[in-house]
Length: 284
Image 1 (cartoon, rainbow, N blue to C red):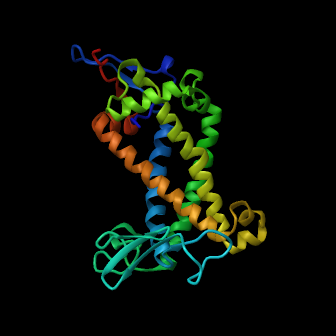
Image 2: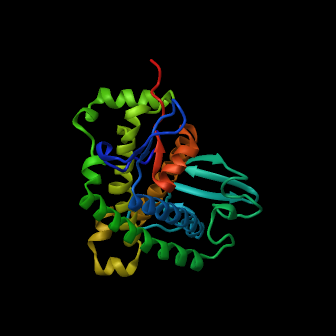
Image 3: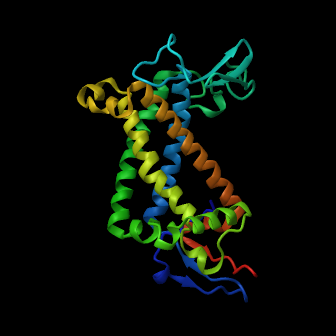
């Protein structure tokens, strides 16, 4: 997934001609509300992932169904035997010493380097997690309102009819696999893989992680009994919540890798200042 933050209407985007002969023009591509949401969301997701890993350390096992306790059969376990860490997935055990289960001289599922707080504290981790959960909910709601009112959702994120074809998507996948990112006029707008990824975050990952988080609250379960039924029980909700967190982590890794490969200076300038230099057309 190539990365850029094409948030403006391509036809009406402001443009500056470069003073350097032969250089591509600068275009105003990322609007201020999008830049604010990007950085707010980035901070929020990082804090929630890190505090969530500390919460997971309190019971590093995942189950499907209504119940989940030590005597039940988990589908995922991150644990240790002495100083040997392991990950057990669907009954298959993988040694993970130094990464998971036992790392940095600690016997937690996730090591201190990636958790908030860095020393074991379930209470503190929950406070961090719940505080930033509100930030995620409010910022995502405001951004969705902006998307609808500004037309950004319809204009920039919705797949065009020609982009929905299997052949078009397959071509885009092959171009990305070859690290051939959009250039020239094509770089003004999101490509199909970007649209699918961003729509997935907005309409799948964020709503699901919020609802499953609510499902794990006994108070909310009592107020809204349909929540545990929606996900097949609190244990299943916790598993889905964990998988969504993994989806966020994967998105971040791919996103950052694409930023580096596509040109970090140009990409960062776009998401900080809004201005982006169109890459020169690729020679055929």
